Length: 261
Image 1 (tube, rainbow, N blue to C red):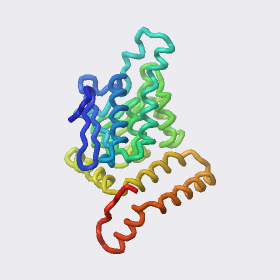
Image 2: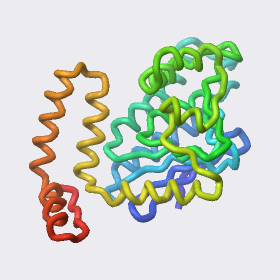
Image 3: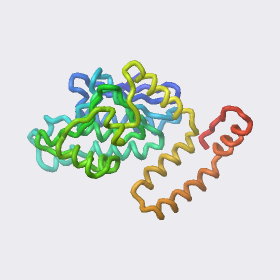
Image 4: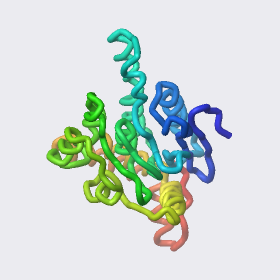
């Protein structure tokens, strides 16, 4: 049962579903919502029963509209406004360092700061009709922190186009650009998310963690440093019980029984 007021948190069959649940604000990323989202992700990371995290929304057509714009114009000092921006990048990093795979279930529009949340997840499944974009420039601001993620997922020219023009793109174009993995019809969406979540939950948690951590750490290394680091991670993987069990199960033609060690 969820203990949060701005989102729903449920765990079943190794899958923690964290659903943004502020439909009246179109899941605007308020300080309260981001604080609870961070707490939910930390709970999922600490829970040995959780193998995968699905980030979702209860709004019928919007994943999240992005930052709470009212806070931008609020009466506050520069230091107070600066402190109020720390949660979003902290969550971006937390998703990268979660040690467990994450899926963004984009059942609706993914805009502004929410685009950063989606790009911080390992996989993104979009529902037909969802739009992706960073429209902040249209209201006189700029998606500074989201730009760091966007430039790492899209070629520089297209990323700059999205950031400076602020135009929204379809879910299908998001897949073409590398912002999402697949687009599913409304009838197939929930089942498609559940299928991928179940597959991820059925993998070795030890190897998944090593692999996810390796992807996160090596992404911005030069080739030789990346290969050297990844070779050390392979050595760690080869020392796990799960890799021995996986190979044994393959030759014995049976499902593996993972211990996470």
